[in-house]
Image 1 (tube, rainbow, N blue to C red):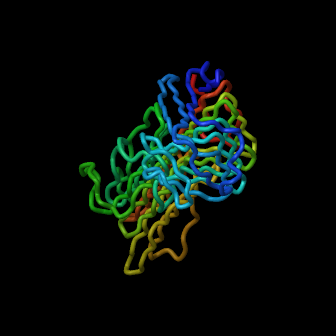
Image 2: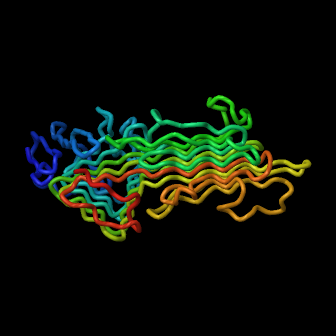
Image 3: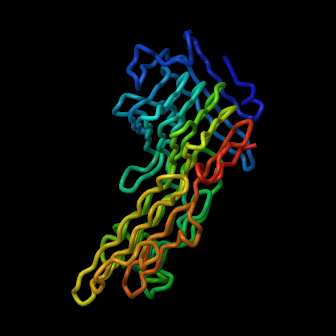
Length: 408
């Protein structure tokens, strides 16, 4: 057994248990394919646990190791089954899908993506990332690994052609815009939750489909649009070696963009909140050119209306966040038949709100403007970045978002 005293001193444990002998933990298996190495002795285990902070943050995981990993191409893991088409597997004996190896390196051309209900954890004696790890949710795709699918407080759902509310996590999502000239129809309310274990963000809510009016009970209206999913959850734990996030490293746990209102009388859907990125090592090296973010997704645009038989255009989806400073691009509201061209995007009737880190006013979906036109969906709130290390994580808002919090 070996353990890193520097990590143990700050209140968490990281241990390896082995009945096998290896010549070097630091080198990949040279006889294996360059991206995915075969398993080693099944009795070799890596374990890690955290119980610290106020409020108390608790998580633990233990998994058999595979040989050291040098990932230089794209691999996508399903955390429910623990498998990938490329052959890389993670252990699913507990609530977390755990990839454990003596060392894990993701090169500049490598990308590790994960989706499924379980969060993803990478445990190793040394971790270096110069490529991409993506547990984000994306528009019109499976939710990111560990995105929160239950237990969310949705607040008041959209009514009429109101827009859906943005998802919550460590920060609030924006309210949906009202149907034109119909106050109280946009989705709103809900609440943030305590980040006390490894879990992702909440999704936004769907836009109204015209079936309910203001003052109706807060029940699902069965609208065709769905809210963007919240971001997933990722845990990187390296001991005793440093966690190196080098130039070009991208770690993304952002929420997905909301859909646009697809039919007349439909509001846009809210974007998902950001998820959680947990970084654990005695020493963490963050290059200024790395990008670490768990931002909110933008809302979709509300649909236009048909006036005098002149037709309409549905609202458009937003586009997902693509960097620490990005809350995505809001979905433009649809155009009704009396307009010759779409208005400018961003602040026009029916436009969706931007996701975090955009300010709260920009996360609010725009109202429809005229009677019957759909409101835009609200943008998703902030996710979280938590750090377990001997020092605060270096970095600024230009390369890490939201601001990291070191558990103490």
